[in-house]
Image (cartoon, rainbow, N blue to C red; front, side):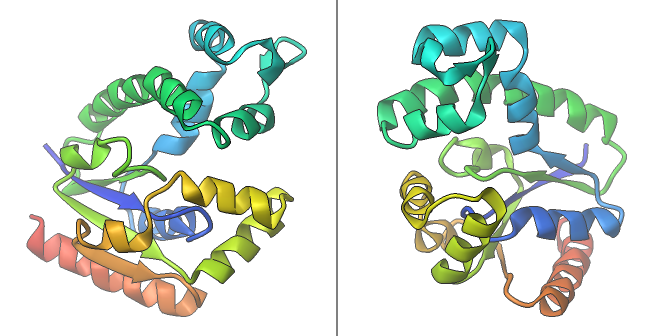
Length: 196
């Protein structure tokens, strides 16, 4: 079986950019956050979300991610309820996905809340992507068209970099793209030597 390397980072850290760099090096990458979005729109899960969060988070009968975010990032209990619906299904899908990539030396599981969800326990090692808080806030505001206050609310629901650092084997600082590429390549080489 392939080793499982977790890849995480706070909102706006650029973990997806880093994941893409690993994918360009031929590493199979599982995007847990993307799969969580896909699962949200399946009929069974949509119904559970409606029962848990109410009709108000739907637009034209379809879960509305912006409305869901505004509810769950203001109410930690509702966030926990949503995670309890989504995360076990993502974990099950990931298990199936790893079987398809069993021949790879290692695979990467990219997830925003790898530690918070407990998914890090299934990883052989974790890569943390970091960036200064102000850069992260600016990135998310530009990407999602949201206010600074909304970004800070989302950040408040994630562990801090300091909390994650103690549990991460590799750290990539993502400020300058070319420098990040060098760090990714160095980590890739380490993983090929050390994790195999």
